Image (tube, rainbow, N blue to C red; front, side, top):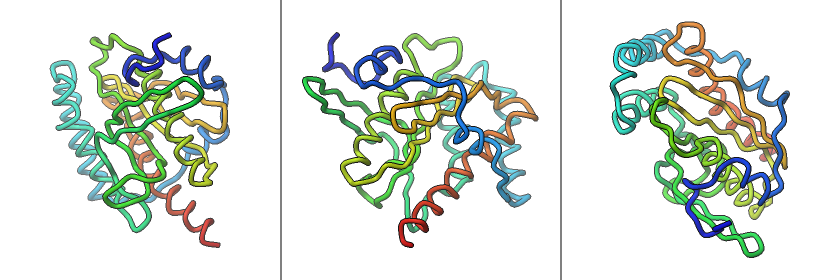
Length: 219
């Protein structure tokens, strides 16, 4: 295996075999994340619904850059990830060095501690591919980035789970990496009135999780 390759060329099986992680089908952490009740103002919900309506009309025509610029970016902006504890970063590089393995890659969107330099990663959102043009393995790309985030956190003495998502057009998948185990949710369709609130609420839940984590650390 070419261990010097970029994150974008890793597949999930290679990440499992190289770094000793394994997939589980059930996770109480993932269940709590996706079921969390979050209070969101009507104005913010209306803005999010406008984005969903735009997605319904155009998702079959948008390329990767347009999907990111007109839907994913504005949706994340509504969450207001920037707080006293964490900052939203784009196109940040993560690396892993383990034995004779050394690999690196850019993460499309990451919420981490730090203001100008990303320190401890908490949440990673990766791969904005249209669903009919996904050639490589998006879950493998996200998983290798999440493993890199976990190892970066361990160097800082942090052992909390890492949360992430990958997107294929209208479909969102939520992932939790807890120690050596990771779990992937079902696909949530952002064009659908039933699924979209879960996607948006789960993004807000990340911000609350980070605030609670810092509160626990300060105590």
